[in-house]
Image (tube, rainbow, N blue to C red):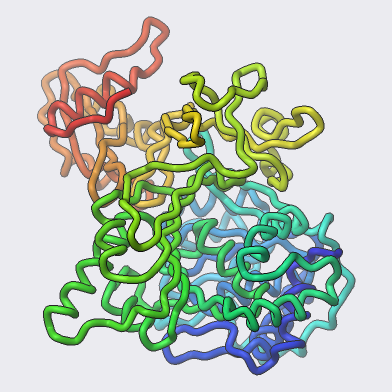
Length: 544
């Protein structure tokens, strides 16, 4: 089968032309309209030299256009990439440089970020989506561009030679592009088809009939990515929804409004919600309670599943949702490099537990020599998941070789998460071999924050660590050694960080010490820094 997503989505659009593909507030876009608009954008991109494996960057909030950009790029065999809309100029420039993007589609309200990098990328095609912002005079209007082009004719494409790239945090703090071939990505849907009541298609001609089988089984998804589409889980589940001829429903607010979320669920009969742990779930529970107290509870009976990935989703919050609805809670332990490594599935009547996972069906625990660790041995190892997995990291063969390894003829993704597995398959995650901080689903690496802090004249040394936090999973905390004789506070340091980094990377807590402990080789002792910060803040750290 040619598992090219543009060809698959075209087959769905041909079979279900009048079905609603995407909802955003009052906007309702049918499959026919989505395919037509995407084809017009593809023609516009092709006319400007965008072709096979060229990068098309989406610097957008959640919106209809996000999925049109993806479909359009796939149609002309280009590669859509995600850029976090929270990025400031330096971070934006890094991704544009690393990807060598040919085109950037952005919301007009984000134009100020582009001002500082435009001179470095004079040939970059700028396309702006109108959201009321000021925009740029040198950018093409999105709607005007579509109106000026006829739909691009359909062309032969390949599942093996066409790609999608997901940008995620790298070991140096800057994003890394994870490269998926279309056939690799489609290969991850086997379980989705089975759980939806059918088997995966063997040919492109079977794609639409399989979607019809899913419909007859009553399992056509109506998916709300409440979390940003810049996150892999949100994009992948939206992508899957469109393969099954379902509907993707976007919220209109730029910040989470849990009342808007439940109102939209009620109106659109959403079946699946994608969130990022407690940062989303806590406000959702609060909104349900507030509506009930007003005597006008939300009808959430359509919701069959809430999916979270990338950050801790705590037991009390899970339990609160289970007590208020008849849905399955799916807590996924995965990575941009593949997964799931572990899954926690809770249904009504279950007792919720925090961060308790069962090892995934394609996952193993390995020693450093790549031999498998048996369950129940109490031996610590690194998690690996078997193919289908990504091809590798964009322009980083060394990191690709380390992370994606062939063992006994099977290709595995091994991004570096350490764990133990009980005899019954219960997985105990111990953490990434690196010191990545996961705050509200965003990856933050200490070094990038530390290096900016060290620019400040009153900072002699510092470490940045994650401290357990009820809402964010981990709160970024700076442990700072001031310059001798200096009197400095957190509010004195924040402006420098905000000048260079996205707001979510700015520490929420500040701890000042006389001396930062380092190894004889000068390496950071993050365990000491974390313990010191936790002690100063009165926060208990988990054992181990």
